[in-house]
Picture 1 (cartoon, rainbow, N blue to C red):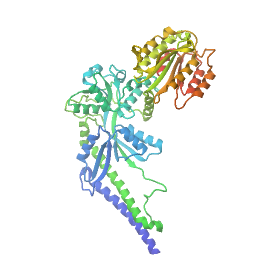
Picture 2: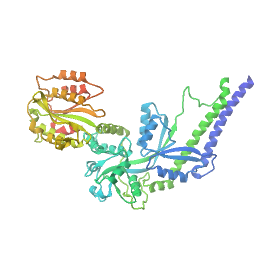
Picture 3: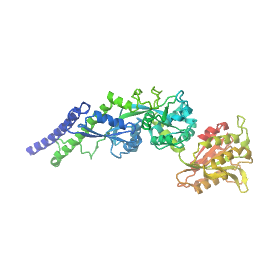
Length: 578
Protein backbone atom coordinates (compact mmCIF):
# COMPACT_ATOMS: atom_id res chain seq x y z
CA UNK A 1 0.00 0.00 0.00
CA UNK A 2 2.82 2.33 0.84
CA UNK A 3 4.42 1.66 -2.47
CA UNK A 4 1.11 2.26 -4.33
CA UNK A 5 0.54 5.53 -2.51
CA UNK A 6 4.02 6.72 -3.35
CA UNK A 7 3.49 5.85 -7.01
CA UNK A 8 0.22 7.83 -7.13
CA UNK A 9 1.99 10.84 -5.72
CA UNK A 10 4.80 10.52 -8.21
CA UNK A 11 2.41 10.22 -11.15
CA UNK A 12 0.56 13.35 -10.08
CA UNK A 13 3.75 15.27 -9.42
CA UNK A 14 5.26 14.19 -12.74
CA UNK A 15 2.16 15.27 -14.60
CA UNK A 16 2.21 18.68 -12.99
CA UNK A 17 5.91 19.07 -13.70
CA UNK A 18 5.38 18.02 -17.31
CA UNK A 19 2.59 20.57 -17.70
CA UNK A 20 4.73 23.39 -16.34
CA UNK A 21 7.73 22.44 -18.47
CA UNK A 22 5.59 22.20 -21.62
CA UNK A 23 4.05 25.62 -21.03
CA UNK A 24 7.43 27.15 -20.24
CA UNK A 25 9.05 25.65 -23.34
CA UNK A 26 6.28 27.05 -25.55
CA UNK A 27 6.52 30.54 -24.08
CA UNK A 28 10.31 30.53 -24.40
CA UNK A 29 10.10 29.34 -27.99
CA UNK A 30 7.62 32.11 -28.91
CA UNK A 31 9.51 34.78 -27.07
CA UNK A 32 12.61 33.75 -28.96
CA UNK A 33 10.79 34.40 -32.27
CA UNK A 34 8.37 37.17 -33.18
CA UNK A 35 9.75 40.47 -34.37
CA UNK A 36 13.28 39.55 -33.35
CA UNK A 37 13.19 36.53 -35.65
CA UNK A 38 14.60 33.85 -33.28
CA UNK A 39 14.14 30.10 -33.73
CA UNK A 40 10.82 28.49 -32.73
CA UNK A 41 9.91 24.83 -32.32
CA UNK A 42 6.63 25.34 -34.22
CA UNK A 43 4.35 28.12 -35.39
CA UNK A 44 1.41 29.00 -33.15
CA UNK A 45 -1.83 29.65 -35.07
CA UNK A 46 -3.30 33.08 -34.29
CA UNK A 47 -6.61 34.37 -35.62
CA UNK A 48 -6.81 38.15 -35.98
CA UNK A 49 -10.11 39.79 -36.91
CA UNK A 50 -9.84 43.38 -38.12
CA UNK A 51 -12.22 46.02 -39.43
CA UNK A 52 -12.16 45.81 -43.24
CA UNK A 53 -10.60 49.28 -43.65
CA UNK A 54 -7.52 48.48 -41.58
CA UNK A 55 -7.24 44.74 -42.35
CA UNK A 56 -4.96 45.14 -45.43
CA UNK A 57 -2.45 47.26 -43.48
CA UNK A 58 -2.52 44.79 -40.59
CA UNK A 59 -1.93 41.94 -43.02
CA UNK A 60 1.05 43.78 -44.53
CA UNK A 61 2.61 44.44 -41.12
CA UNK A 62 2.12 40.88 -39.90
CA UNK A 63 3.55 39.30 -43.05
CA UNK A 64 6.55 41.61 -43.03
CA UNK A 65 7.40 41.90 -39.34
CA UNK A 66 6.25 38.71 -37.60
CA UNK A 67 8.38 35.57 -37.80
CA UNK A 68 6.10 33.05 -39.52
CA UNK A 69 8.04 30.14 -38.08
CA UNK A 70 6.79 31.29 -34.66
CA UNK A 71 3.32 32.68 -35.38
CA UNK A 72 1.00 31.51 -38.15
CA UNK A 73 -1.23 34.60 -38.17
CA UNK A 74 -4.46 34.70 -40.12
CA UNK A 75 -5.98 38.18 -40.68
CA UNK A 76 -9.74 38.08 -41.28
CA UNK A 77 -11.63 41.27 -42.30
CA UNK A 78 -15.01 41.50 -40.59
CA UNK A 79 -17.40 44.32 -39.70
CA UNK A 80 -17.01 45.42 -36.09
CA UNK A 81 -20.74 45.32 -35.32
CA UNK A 82 -20.91 41.65 -36.37
CA UNK A 83 -17.93 40.70 -34.22
CA UNK A 84 -19.36 42.54 -31.20
CA UNK A 85 -22.69 40.73 -31.56
CA UNK A 86 -21.00 37.33 -31.87
CA UNK A 87 -18.79 37.93 -28.83
CA UNK A 88 -21.73 39.09 -26.74
CA UNK A 89 -23.79 36.03 -27.69
CA UNK A 90 -20.88 33.61 -27.38
CA UNK A 91 -21.34 32.34 -30.95
CA UNK A 92 -18.69 31.52 -33.52
CA UNK A 93 -14.95 31.27 -33.04
CA UNK A 94 -13.63 34.22 -31.01
CA UNK A 95 -10.44 35.78 -32.38
CA UNK A 96 -7.32 36.00 -30.25
CA UNK A 97 -6.87 39.60 -31.41
CA UNK A 98 -9.61 41.93 -32.59
CA UNK A 99 -9.04 45.34 -34.18
CA UNK A 100 -12.45 47.06 -34.48
CA UNK A 101 -12.83 50.51 -35.99
CA UNK A 102 -14.05 52.01 -32.73
CA UNK A 103 -13.62 51.37 -29.03
CA UNK A 104 -17.43 51.60 -28.82
CA UNK A 105 -17.72 48.02 -30.04
CA UNK A 106 -15.73 46.16 -27.33
CA UNK A 107 -17.54 48.24 -24.70
CA UNK A 108 -20.85 47.34 -26.25
CA UNK A 109 -19.90 43.66 -26.52
CA UNK A 110 -19.05 43.55 -22.81
CA UNK A 111 -22.29 45.27 -21.84
CA UNK A 112 -24.45 43.05 -24.03
CA UNK A 113 -22.68 39.91 -22.81
CA UNK A 114 -23.33 40.92 -19.20
CA UNK A 115 -26.98 41.62 -20.00
CA UNK A 116 -27.49 38.28 -21.72
CA UNK A 117 -25.88 35.71 -19.45
CA UNK A 118 -22.44 36.85 -18.47
CA UNK A 119 -19.43 37.23 -20.76
CA UNK A 120 -18.30 33.94 -22.37
CA UNK A 121 -14.83 35.43 -22.74
CA UNK A 122 -12.63 38.24 -21.46
CA UNK A 123 -12.58 41.27 -23.75
CA UNK A 124 -9.50 43.31 -22.92
CA UNK A 125 -9.16 46.65 -24.69
CA UNK A 126 -5.70 48.09 -25.37
CA UNK A 127 -4.58 51.43 -26.83
CA UNK A 128 -5.60 52.33 -30.41
CA UNK A 129 -3.24 51.71 -33.32
CA UNK A 130 -4.49 54.69 -35.34
CA UNK A 131 -7.40 57.09 -35.77
CA UNK A 132 -9.43 58.41 -38.69
CA UNK A 133 -11.73 61.45 -38.30
CA UNK A 134 -15.38 61.25 -39.30
CA UNK A 135 -15.92 63.59 -42.26
CA UNK A 136 -18.57 64.56 -44.73
CA UNK A 137 -17.92 63.08 -48.16
CA UNK A 138 -19.13 64.54 -51.43
CA UNK A 139 -18.17 64.45 -55.08
CA UNK A 140 -15.43 66.85 -56.11
CA UNK A 141 -17.79 68.49 -58.60
CA UNK A 142 -20.33 69.26 -55.85
CA UNK A 143 -17.91 70.30 -53.13
CA UNK A 144 -18.10 74.03 -53.83
CA UNK A 145 -21.77 73.99 -52.78
CA UNK A 146 -20.47 73.36 -49.28
CA UNK A 147 -17.76 76.02 -49.51
CA UNK A 148 -14.92 73.53 -50.07
CA UNK A 149 -11.99 74.01 -49.86
CA UNK A 150 -11.96 77.63 -48.64
CA UNK A 151 -14.72 77.21 -46.04
CA UNK A 152 -15.90 74.24 -44.06
CA UNK A 153 -19.57 73.99 -43.03
CA UNK A 154 -20.72 73.05 -39.53
CA UNK A 155 -22.63 69.89 -38.70
CA UNK A 156 -25.90 71.81 -38.71
CA UNK A 157 -25.31 72.87 -42.31
CA UNK A 158 -24.44 69.30 -43.29
CA UNK A 159 -27.60 68.01 -41.64
CA UNK A 160 -29.99 70.67 -42.94
CA UNK A 161 -28.04 70.69 -46.14
CA UNK A 162 -28.11 72.49 -49.36
CA UNK A 163 -27.53 69.02 -50.77
CA UNK A 164 -29.15 65.74 -49.63
CA UNK A 165 -27.34 64.06 -46.74
CA UNK A 166 -27.43 60.39 -45.83
CA UNK A 167 -25.57 58.02 -43.54
CA UNK A 168 -24.66 54.37 -43.24
CA UNK A 169 -27.03 52.21 -41.21
CA UNK A 170 -26.07 53.02 -37.58
CA UNK A 171 -26.97 49.53 -36.43
CA UNK A 172 -24.23 48.04 -38.61
CA UNK A 173 -21.75 50.82 -39.47
CA UNK A 174 -19.54 52.72 -37.06
CA UNK A 175 -19.69 55.78 -39.30
CA UNK A 176 -23.49 55.87 -39.13
CA UNK A 177 -23.58 55.41 -35.36
CA UNK A 178 -20.87 58.03 -34.82
CA UNK A 179 -22.84 60.49 -36.97
CA UNK A 180 -25.96 59.99 -34.86
CA UNK A 181 -23.93 60.58 -31.71
CA UNK A 182 -22.60 63.87 -33.10
CA UNK A 183 -26.14 64.91 -34.06
CA UNK A 184 -27.32 63.89 -30.60
CA UNK A 185 -24.59 66.05 -29.07
CA UNK A 186 -25.63 69.08 -31.12
CA UNK A 187 -29.33 68.66 -30.36
CA UNK A 188 -28.99 67.96 -26.66
CA UNK A 189 -30.19 70.07 -23.75
CA UNK A 190 -27.71 71.26 -21.08
CA UNK A 191 -28.89 68.40 -18.84
CA UNK A 192 -28.02 65.88 -21.54
CA UNK A 193 -31.59 65.08 -22.62
CA UNK A 194 -32.39 65.25 -26.35
CA UNK A 195 -34.39 68.14 -27.79
CA UNK A 196 -37.57 67.42 -29.83
CA UNK A 197 -35.74 68.36 -33.03
CA UNK A 198 -33.61 65.24 -32.71
CA UNK A 199 -36.33 62.98 -34.10
CA UNK A 200 -36.91 65.31 -37.03
CA UNK A 201 -33.20 65.46 -37.79
CA UNK A 202 -32.89 61.68 -37.64
CA UNK A 203 -35.77 61.44 -40.08
CA UNK A 204 -33.90 63.76 -42.44
CA UNK A 205 -30.60 61.93 -42.39
CA UNK A 206 -32.27 58.54 -42.16
CA UNK A 207 -34.15 58.86 -45.41
CA UNK A 208 -32.24 56.75 -47.88
CA UNK A 209 -29.73 55.45 -45.31
CA UNK A 210 -27.42 52.96 -46.97
CA UNK A 211 -26.49 49.51 -45.61
CA UNK A 212 -22.74 50.02 -46.09
CA UNK A 213 -20.35 52.91 -46.66
CA UNK A 214 -19.29 51.33 -49.94
CA UNK A 215 -22.90 51.58 -51.08
CA UNK A 216 -22.72 55.33 -50.37
CA UNK A 217 -19.58 55.63 -52.51
CA UNK A 218 -21.30 53.67 -55.28
CA UNK A 219 -24.27 56.03 -55.06
CA UNK A 220 -21.93 59.03 -55.17
CA UNK A 221 -20.41 57.79 -58.40
CA UNK A 222 -23.67 56.83 -60.12
CA UNK A 223 -26.06 59.61 -59.10
CA UNK A 224 -26.26 62.79 -61.20
CA UNK A 225 -27.57 64.65 -58.14
CA UNK A 226 -25.40 66.11 -55.38
CA UNK A 227 -25.01 63.98 -52.27
CA UNK A 228 -23.23 64.17 -48.92
CA UNK A 229 -22.67 61.21 -46.62
CA UNK A 230 -20.47 60.61 -43.60
CA UNK A 231 -17.48 58.31 -43.65
CA UNK A 232 -13.96 58.02 -42.29
CA UNK A 233 -11.23 60.23 -43.72
CA UNK A 234 -9.22 57.12 -44.57
CA UNK A 235 -12.04 55.80 -46.75
CA UNK A 236 -11.75 58.93 -48.92
CA UNK A 237 -8.04 58.19 -49.49
CA UNK A 238 -8.77 54.56 -50.33
CA UNK A 239 -11.63 55.44 -52.68
CA UNK A 240 -9.63 58.01 -54.62
CA UNK A 241 -6.65 55.69 -54.95
CA UNK A 242 -8.88 53.00 -56.39
CA UNK A 243 -10.39 55.54 -58.80
CA UNK A 244 -6.99 56.94 -59.77
CA UNK A 245 -8.26 60.49 -59.32
CA UNK A 246 -9.82 62.80 -56.74
CA UNK A 247 -13.44 61.88 -57.34
CA UNK A 248 -14.45 62.42 -53.68
CA UNK A 249 -13.38 65.00 -51.13
CA UNK A 250 -13.52 65.16 -47.34
CA UNK A 251 -15.46 68.00 -45.72
CA UNK A 252 -14.36 68.72 -42.15
CA UNK A 253 -17.13 70.19 -39.93
CA UNK A 254 -15.90 73.48 -38.50
CA UNK A 255 -17.38 72.70 -35.07
CA UNK A 256 -15.27 69.57 -34.69
CA UNK A 257 -15.79 65.88 -35.26
CA UNK A 258 -15.24 62.53 -33.61
CA UNK A 259 -12.66 59.99 -34.76
CA UNK A 260 -12.83 56.32 -35.44
CA UNK A 261 -10.07 54.76 -33.38
CA UNK A 262 -8.71 51.27 -33.90
CA UNK A 263 -7.97 49.67 -30.53
CA UNK A 264 -6.23 46.34 -30.16
CA UNK A 265 -8.58 44.03 -28.28
CA UNK A 266 -7.35 40.81 -26.68
CA UNK A 267 -10.03 38.13 -26.48
CA UNK A 268 -9.46 35.29 -24.03
CA UNK A 269 -11.81 32.38 -23.51
CA UNK A 270 -12.94 32.10 -19.91
CA UNK A 271 -12.03 28.79 -18.25
CA UNK A 272 -14.85 26.61 -16.88
CA UNK A 273 -15.28 26.39 -13.14
CA UNK A 274 -17.33 24.41 -10.64
CA UNK A 275 -18.14 20.68 -10.58
CA UNK A 276 -17.63 20.27 -14.32
CA UNK A 277 -14.19 21.87 -14.32
CA UNK A 278 -11.60 19.30 -15.43
CA UNK A 279 -8.65 21.63 -15.80
CA UNK A 280 -7.28 21.39 -12.26
CA UNK A 281 -3.86 19.80 -11.64
CA UNK A 282 -3.67 16.28 -10.21
CA UNK A 283 -2.51 16.27 -6.59
CA UNK A 284 -1.17 13.68 -4.13
CA UNK A 285 -4.62 13.41 -2.51
CA UNK A 286 -6.33 11.94 -5.58
CA UNK A 287 -8.20 8.72 -4.98
CA UNK A 288 -7.19 5.36 -6.41
CA UNK A 289 -9.85 5.60 -9.14
CA UNK A 290 -8.44 8.94 -10.25
CA UNK A 291 -4.92 7.51 -10.27
CA UNK A 292 -5.68 5.38 -13.33
CA UNK A 293 -6.54 8.48 -15.40
CA UNK A 294 -4.23 10.97 -13.71
CA UNK A 295 -1.57 10.81 -16.36
CA UNK A 296 -4.02 11.41 -19.24
CA UNK A 297 -5.85 14.22 -17.43
CA UNK A 298 -2.63 15.97 -16.51
CA UNK A 299 -1.35 15.63 -20.05
CA UNK A 300 -4.57 17.18 -21.42
CA UNK A 301 -4.36 19.97 -18.88
CA UNK A 302 -0.73 20.61 -19.70
CA UNK A 303 -1.52 20.69 -23.40
CA UNK A 304 -4.45 23.08 -22.87
CA UNK A 305 -2.52 25.39 -20.59
CA UNK A 306 0.49 25.31 -22.88
CA UNK A 307 -1.76 26.14 -25.84
CA UNK A 308 -3.26 29.10 -24.01
CA UNK A 309 0.19 30.32 -23.04
CA UNK A 310 1.38 29.94 -26.62
CA UNK A 311 -1.60 31.89 -27.96
CA UNK A 312 -1.04 34.62 -25.38
CA UNK A 313 2.62 34.89 -26.29
CA UNK A 314 1.79 34.94 -30.02
CA UNK A 315 -0.76 37.72 -29.43
CA UNK A 316 1.85 39.75 -27.57
CA UNK A 317 4.31 39.23 -30.41
CA UNK A 318 1.82 40.43 -33.04
CA UNK A 319 0.65 43.40 -30.98
CA UNK A 320 4.27 44.48 -30.48
CA UNK A 321 4.81 44.26 -34.25
CA UNK A 322 1.71 46.41 -34.86
CA UNK A 323 3.12 49.20 -32.67
CA UNK A 324 6.61 49.57 -34.13
CA UNK A 325 7.62 52.81 -35.94
CA UNK A 326 7.63 50.88 -39.21
CA UNK A 327 4.06 49.72 -38.57
CA UNK A 328 2.97 53.31 -37.85
CA UNK A 329 4.45 54.36 -41.20
CA UNK A 330 2.49 51.58 -42.92
CA UNK A 331 -0.76 52.72 -41.33
CA UNK A 332 -0.08 56.35 -42.27
CA UNK A 333 0.64 55.35 -45.84
CA UNK A 334 -2.79 53.66 -45.92
CA UNK A 335 -4.43 56.99 -45.02
CA UNK A 336 -4.77 56.59 -41.26
CA UNK A 337 -3.53 59.14 -38.77
CA UNK A 338 -1.39 58.05 -35.85
CA UNK A 339 -2.76 58.16 -32.30
CA UNK A 340 -1.79 61.85 -32.03
CA UNK A 341 -3.70 62.73 -35.20
CA UNK A 342 -0.64 63.15 -37.42
CA UNK A 343 -1.14 62.14 -41.04
CA UNK A 344 1.57 60.71 -43.25
CA UNK A 345 2.91 62.27 -46.44
CA UNK A 346 0.42 61.11 -49.09
CA UNK A 347 2.42 61.85 -52.22
CA UNK A 348 0.02 60.60 -54.88
CA UNK A 349 -1.87 63.94 -54.93
CA UNK A 350 -5.30 62.33 -55.24
CA UNK A 351 -6.15 61.92 -51.57
CA UNK A 352 -8.96 64.51 -51.44
CA UNK A 353 -8.26 65.26 -47.78
CA UNK A 354 -6.71 68.07 -45.75
CA UNK A 355 -3.50 67.07 -43.91
CA UNK A 356 -3.92 69.50 -41.00
CA UNK A 357 -5.40 67.94 -37.89
CA UNK A 358 -9.12 68.69 -37.47
CA UNK A 359 -10.69 69.58 -34.13
CA UNK A 360 -11.48 66.26 -32.46
CA UNK A 361 -14.32 65.82 -29.99
CA UNK A 362 -14.57 63.09 -27.38
CA UNK A 363 -16.77 60.17 -28.39
CA UNK A 364 -20.03 60.38 -26.36
CA UNK A 365 -20.66 57.70 -23.72
CA UNK A 366 -22.07 54.30 -24.58
CA UNK A 367 -25.39 55.15 -22.90
CA UNK A 368 -26.04 57.77 -25.57
CA UNK A 369 -25.30 55.25 -28.31
CA UNK A 370 -27.99 52.97 -26.89
CA UNK A 371 -30.44 55.85 -26.63
CA UNK A 372 -29.85 57.20 -30.12
CA UNK A 373 -30.20 53.74 -31.68
CA UNK A 374 -33.54 53.33 -29.92
CA UNK A 375 -34.75 56.68 -31.31
CA UNK A 376 -33.41 55.74 -34.75
CA UNK A 377 -35.35 52.47 -34.70
CA UNK A 378 -38.55 54.36 -33.89
CA UNK A 379 -38.29 57.17 -36.43
CA UNK A 380 -37.14 55.01 -39.34
CA UNK A 381 -39.86 52.36 -39.06
CA UNK A 382 -42.32 52.51 -41.93
CA UNK A 383 -45.64 53.91 -40.74
CA UNK A 384 -49.34 53.89 -41.66
CA UNK A 385 -50.74 57.06 -40.10
CA UNK A 386 -54.29 58.35 -40.02
CA UNK A 387 -54.15 62.03 -39.02
CA UNK A 388 -57.21 63.69 -37.42
CA UNK A 389 -57.27 67.50 -37.21
CA UNK A 390 -59.79 69.35 -35.03
CA UNK A 391 -61.57 72.02 -37.10
CA UNK A 392 -64.13 73.06 -34.48
CA UNK A 393 -64.89 76.76 -34.08
CA UNK A 394 -62.62 77.11 -31.04
CA UNK A 395 -59.62 76.46 -33.29
CA UNK A 396 -60.15 80.00 -34.60
CA UNK A 397 -59.09 81.41 -31.23
CA UNK A 398 -56.02 83.65 -31.26
CA UNK A 399 -52.98 81.71 -30.05
CA UNK A 400 -50.19 84.28 -30.01
CA UNK A 401 -47.83 85.69 -32.61
CA UNK A 402 -50.85 86.89 -34.57
CA UNK A 403 -51.92 83.35 -35.50
CA UNK A 404 -54.91 81.23 -34.62
CA UNK A 405 -54.76 77.72 -33.24
CA UNK A 406 -55.75 76.19 -36.57
CA UNK A 407 -53.06 78.19 -38.35
CA UNK A 408 -50.44 76.91 -35.91
CA UNK A 409 -51.71 73.35 -36.38
CA UNK A 410 -51.54 73.82 -40.16
CA UNK A 411 -47.98 75.12 -40.02
CA UNK A 412 -46.86 72.29 -37.71
CA UNK A 413 -48.34 69.72 -40.09
CA UNK A 414 -46.74 71.35 -43.12
CA UNK A 415 -43.37 71.46 -41.32
CA UNK A 416 -43.55 67.78 -40.47
CA UNK A 417 -44.90 66.55 -43.82
CA UNK A 418 -41.55 66.70 -45.72
CA UNK A 419 -39.90 64.56 -43.04
CA UNK A 420 -41.94 61.46 -43.84
CA UNK A 421 -40.30 59.17 -46.42
CA UNK A 422 -42.08 58.18 -49.59
CA UNK A 423 -42.74 54.72 -48.13
CA UNK A 424 -45.14 56.17 -45.49
CA UNK A 425 -48.90 55.55 -45.78
CA UNK A 426 -50.93 58.61 -44.68
CA UNK A 427 -54.59 59.60 -44.61
CA UNK A 428 -56.19 62.83 -43.34
CA UNK A 429 -59.56 63.51 -41.69
CA UNK A 430 -60.95 66.82 -40.39
CA UNK A 431 -63.47 66.66 -37.54
CA UNK A 432 -65.78 68.87 -35.51
CA UNK A 433 -69.51 68.11 -35.21
CA UNK A 434 -71.59 66.47 -37.95
CA UNK A 435 -69.17 67.24 -40.74
CA UNK A 436 -71.07 64.66 -42.78
CA UNK A 437 -74.73 63.64 -42.51
CA UNK A 438 -74.06 60.63 -40.28
CA UNK A 439 -70.77 61.39 -38.49
CA UNK A 440 -68.42 64.06 -37.11
CA UNK A 441 -65.58 63.78 -39.60
CA UNK A 442 -64.83 64.18 -43.26
CA UNK A 443 -62.05 62.47 -45.20
CA UNK A 444 -59.82 65.06 -46.86
CA UNK A 445 -57.18 62.69 -48.22
CA UNK A 446 -57.71 58.91 -48.43
CA UNK A 447 -55.18 56.53 -46.90
CA UNK A 448 -52.32 55.46 -49.14
CA UNK A 449 -48.63 55.63 -50.01
CA UNK A 450 -47.04 59.09 -50.26
CA UNK A 451 -46.05 58.50 -53.87
CA UNK A 452 -49.47 57.29 -55.02
CA UNK A 453 -51.69 59.58 -57.07
CA UNK A 454 -54.72 61.31 -55.59
CA UNK A 455 -56.53 62.75 -58.56
CA UNK A 456 -53.99 64.67 -60.61
CA UNK A 457 -51.33 65.03 -57.88
CA UNK A 458 -49.24 62.85 -55.57
CA UNK A 459 -50.57 62.08 -52.12
CA UNK A 460 -47.82 64.23 -50.61
CA UNK A 461 -49.04 67.23 -52.62
CA UNK A 462 -52.69 66.41 -51.84
CA UNK A 463 -51.86 66.41 -48.13
CA UNK A 464 -50.03 69.70 -48.48
CA UNK A 465 -53.06 71.29 -50.14
CA UNK A 466 -55.47 69.82 -47.57
CA UNK A 467 -53.39 71.04 -44.61
CA UNK A 468 -53.22 74.49 -46.19
CA UNK A 469 -57.05 74.54 -46.46
CA UNK A 470 -57.71 73.82 -42.77
CA UNK A 471 -58.26 77.44 -41.62
CA UNK A 472 -61.17 77.71 -44.08
CA UNK A 473 -62.94 74.67 -42.61
CA UNK A 474 -63.40 75.67 -38.94
CA UNK A 475 -66.96 75.49 -37.58
CA UNK A 476 -69.05 73.88 -34.85
CA UNK A 477 -68.30 71.97 -31.66
CA UNK A 478 -65.82 69.14 -31.05
CA UNK A 479 -66.97 65.64 -32.01
CA UNK A 480 -63.83 63.93 -30.69
CA UNK A 481 -64.76 60.51 -29.31
CA UNK A 482 -66.73 59.01 -32.20
CA UNK A 483 -64.08 60.25 -34.62
CA UNK A 484 -61.30 58.57 -32.63
CA UNK A 485 -63.23 55.29 -32.41
CA UNK A 486 -63.98 55.29 -36.15
CA UNK A 487 -60.34 56.04 -36.97
CA UNK A 488 -59.02 53.20 -34.77
CA UNK A 489 -61.45 50.77 -36.36
CA UNK A 490 -60.48 51.94 -39.85
CA UNK A 491 -56.78 51.47 -39.09
CA UNK A 492 -57.32 48.03 -37.60
CA UNK A 493 -59.47 47.00 -40.57
CA UNK A 494 -56.70 47.99 -42.97
CA UNK A 495 -53.83 46.88 -40.72
CA UNK A 496 -50.47 46.41 -42.44
CA UNK A 497 -48.05 44.09 -40.65
CA UNK A 498 -44.49 45.34 -40.19
CA UNK A 499 -45.56 49.00 -39.94
CA UNK A 500 -46.55 51.37 -37.18
CA UNK A 501 -50.33 51.59 -37.63
CA UNK A 502 -51.32 54.65 -35.62
CA UNK A 503 -53.91 57.40 -35.26
CA UNK A 504 -52.60 60.93 -34.67
CA UNK A 505 -55.07 63.48 -33.25
CA UNK A 506 -54.59 67.25 -32.96
CA UNK A 507 -57.26 69.01 -30.87
CA UNK A 508 -57.79 72.05 -28.66
CA UNK A 509 -60.91 70.88 -26.87
CA UNK A 510 -62.88 68.08 -25.32
CA UNK A 511 -65.69 65.85 -26.55
CA UNK A 512 -68.81 68.03 -27.01
CA UNK A 513 -71.27 65.78 -28.89
CA UNK A 514 -74.19 65.06 -26.49
CA UNK A 515 -75.43 62.27 -28.74
CA UNK A 516 -72.02 60.65 -29.17
CA UNK A 517 -69.89 58.19 -27.18
CA UNK A 518 -68.89 59.56 -23.77
CA UNK A 519 -65.34 59.33 -22.40
CA UNK A 520 -65.89 56.26 -20.20
CA UNK A 521 -67.69 54.35 -22.94
CA UNK A 522 -64.96 55.19 -25.44
CA UNK A 523 -62.21 53.91 -23.14
CA UNK A 524 -64.15 50.68 -22.41
CA UNK A 525 -64.77 50.09 -26.12
CA UNK A 526 -61.14 50.73 -27.07
CA UNK A 527 -59.97 48.31 -24.38
CA UNK A 528 -62.50 45.64 -25.38
CA UNK A 529 -61.64 45.87 -29.08
CA UNK A 530 -57.85 46.00 -28.60
CA UNK A 531 -56.05 43.31 -30.59
CA UNK A 532 -52.44 42.62 -29.50
CA UNK A 533 -51.75 41.16 -32.95
CA UNK A 534 -52.91 44.40 -34.61
CA UNK A 535 -52.12 47.28 -32.23
CA UNK A 536 -53.31 50.76 -33.19
CA UNK A 537 -51.92 53.33 -30.74
CA UNK A 538 -53.65 56.72 -30.56
CA UNK A 539 -51.30 59.68 -30.21
CA UNK A 540 -53.09 62.84 -29.07
CA UNK A 541 -51.61 66.33 -29.34
CA UNK A 542 -53.54 68.81 -27.17
CA UNK A 543 -53.31 72.54 -27.88
CA UNK A 544 -53.63 74.97 -24.98
CA UNK A 545 -55.24 74.70 -21.55
CA UNK A 546 -58.91 74.25 -22.52
CA UNK A 547 -58.55 70.53 -23.20
CA UNK A 548 -59.60 67.76 -20.85
CA UNK A 549 -56.06 66.38 -20.75
CA UNK A 550 -56.73 63.56 -18.22
CA UNK A 551 -59.46 62.26 -20.57
CA UNK A 552 -57.03 62.36 -23.48
CA UNK A 553 -54.45 60.47 -21.42
CA UNK A 554 -57.00 57.72 -20.65
CA UNK A 555 -57.87 57.40 -24.34
CA UNK A 556 -54.21 57.13 -25.28
CA UNK A 557 -53.46 54.61 -22.51
CA UNK A 558 -56.35 52.38 -23.62
CA UNK A 559 -54.62 51.96 -26.99
CA UNK A 560 -50.96 51.86 -25.91
CA UNK A 561 -50.48 55.39 -27.24
CA UNK A 562 -49.52 58.68 -25.63
CA UNK A 563 -50.97 62.15 -25.04
CA UNK A 564 -48.92 65.35 -25.36
CA UNK A 565 -49.92 68.84 -24.28
CA UNK A 566 -48.67 72.09 -25.77
CA UNK A 567 -49.65 74.42 -22.95
CA UNK A 568 -48.67 77.31 -25.15
CA UNK A 569 -50.23 76.63 -28.57
CA UNK A 570 -47.23 78.34 -30.13
CA UNK A 571 -45.20 75.29 -29.02
CA UNK A 572 -47.27 72.96 -31.20
CA UNK A 573 -44.47 72.48 -33.74
CA UNK A 574 -42.05 71.18 -31.09
CA UNK A 575 -44.71 68.91 -29.56
CA UNK A 576 -45.73 67.66 -32.99
CA UNK A 577 -42.12 66.74 -33.79
CA UNK A 578 -41.69 65.06 -30.41
